[in-house]
Length: 587
Image (tube, rainbow, N blue to C red; front, side):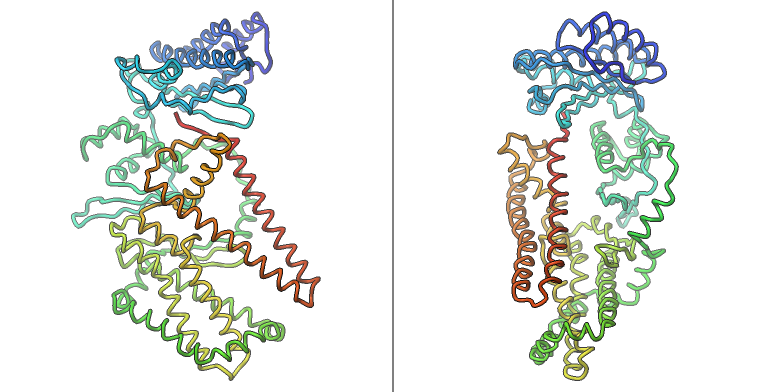
């Protein structure tokens, strides 16, 4: 319910205040607009007190909430008057999940930016309050009184949000996390690794929908297994002490906030009819088929080929790949001849494209299966394996998320390396077949030449650590640096935005010296490699277009490709600009 969206006289506000208290029992939500005048804080205090009392918040909790709101608004008014930007501001009150959420919404040009203050890093005890500056004191008091404080930049507006959870009488100073009854989503995948005594070592919690993955220790596994919507964190806290030992409420809060950030906590479901047509259309456009009992299938295959998973087996596969260079070198001249006849052969035998597509799909299946078999060799699980439609083609995938549980770096690296080793051996076999077929059948030779080029290109791409393929995950596992590409690019982006006075997020400020060195090296090299993959194809296309006889066809193709690139770049630019105009800081 919106109470007021324009400036009102004091008498009108008193009247609206009465209406507000009458209606709040039904809506539990409202918003008031205040002038930038300290005299109007009396009305704000009355409103917040009555709101809290209506929702049965105890006297001590009411005092904490009222004190925090008044501290923030007084500081906002002080800065507004000091900087000569006196404008109305809004106070929004909401009650949800046994918590009062209060938002102070004001003009974005007012330099009231709590994230710039270091109050939340300051002293926590009363005896040290003298060391705090007046500018930081108000925020420090709010941090002590409220459970959650968040600052947002939302376009032309800024928002200071404060949350206070309800407590029973006598538990006002209890950590807010203890009263929450968390419910984990039931569609998440939990892969647990046990030691030789059948005790939990660690685990990986993964979300197929978002791709988010969290690594947990034995304590974390115990906690999330109790998140069933029946146990409060207070219950979990005492059970944890009884079975695993002491844990702090801060640790429970950290896990809960990580789960919230990863969207793994069940939200209240809206009453909305499922759009069956939309779901069917999505499945037709982007089909995703997973093999039933994928882990059992991989175990079955592994038991019959586990003799390969030793140094001798790996050596044989590498030797097969290396040996393929011999027939290729011997028939290089024929390779070039067939390559020059590519266009004519595909025109005369279009069925060749189908042959190539089916064989390449088979090689990709073997490549991904090798990842799964290697994961199984180190006692991992493969919970999903199947085919999906991606970038206008069907691809095979194998979920080896459980490899995050492996203690040794070498085991994690080998899981990523298993696919390229098989692909290298397949390339060697194709080269031998081409050597045997050279000069006998132009149609089959063309198919084999194309397969050699595609397999070789795939291997090169797989060993490029600057794109999200196997070498990238090997590098991440070796450095023990998750999300390396995204974090590096985000860091460089924030360094660039510093030039325009935009502050970096707190997470970046916490980065170590080693992290920043990695960000700079990987970010710059990754940006150059990405640029190369855009500029080089355009350069080659330009040369072909200049010397091509079929200018119209090539021009149309080029314009379509350039349009797709520009659309993609525009979309990314828009998302980056939006991220700058809409950002959030946890205080």
